Amino acid sequence: MGEPSADYREHVQRLVLADKQQKLDRERQQAAAEAERKRQAEERKRKAEALREEAAKKRQKVAAEKKAEGDEKEEEAKKGEEGDEVMEESKAEVEEKPEETAEPSLPETAELTEEEKAIVHRKVGTADVAEAVLARSLAQISMPSKAEGFDEVVYAWQKESESAKLLREWLLEKKKTTRAEDLKPGEWFKGLWTKWQQTMQEWRKVQNEFKDPAKRKSKQEAAKAKKEEEDKAEDGVDEAKGTVDVDVEGLDPLTVDSILDLGNGEPLFANFAFEDWTLLATRVELHLLL
Image (cartoon, rainbow, N blue to C red; front, side, top):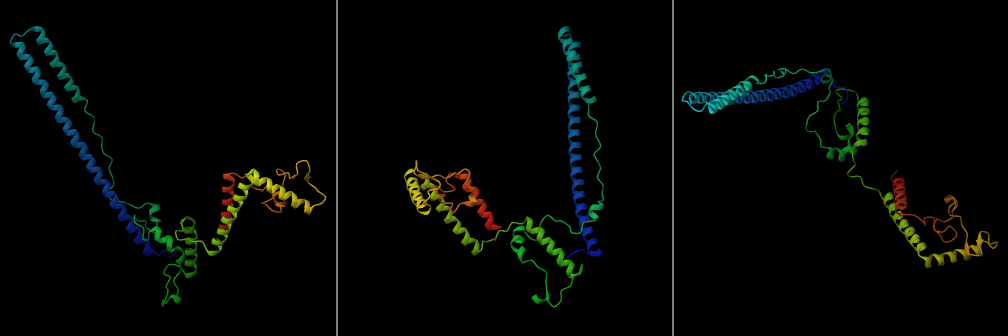
């Protein structure tokens, strides 16, 4: 753990160089196979051109023989022109053969770059420990000690204090990006969560009852009677309507005695919509988690 020795660095560099050489060999083989494929394609193309040229010559020869036998002049001239055209086309095709481009050559021996020489731990395709196993065991990872039954604990690279610091930093960084699959809530959280669910159901029930005209009227009358008993001076009472006058828009929530009744039978959350309940639940959940 920590800064490795020179022997270990040399060993890692040998492994990295061997991997790079294998990759280079595969690339050279692929390049050679591709070059051979192109060569064969060009060879087939040249053979096809030669066959077309030979066929053109035969047609030209046949046309010349017919001309010698006294065929009609127009037909002979026409076929002669066709033969000349075919011959010219064949020659043009031969002349227009694309020039062969030299394939880029790859080095035979791989060499390490400065960045590769600075590699301390070689990365491989398959991890030593699967991410799922590491996530389950992350909380149990610790430094070995004699208390666990070891006769001796030797730190070959760095001292115990420096190694412990490196392990602590690695664990903290790993916990930031590792998902805790086996994390379970404690009894404290379960109790408060259950209590919150019950409270929220009661509040939703109070809201539904307030929206019912018959139940709302009875609550307002009960609130009025309670207010009259507590305040004989009838402050804040609207005698014309027979209900307690409460300015809901300008009301400070922190001054409310009960969020279930603002004084006129109306709960503080009377006009809550689905989004408001969701935001409230999210805020409570975050409060309990943190």
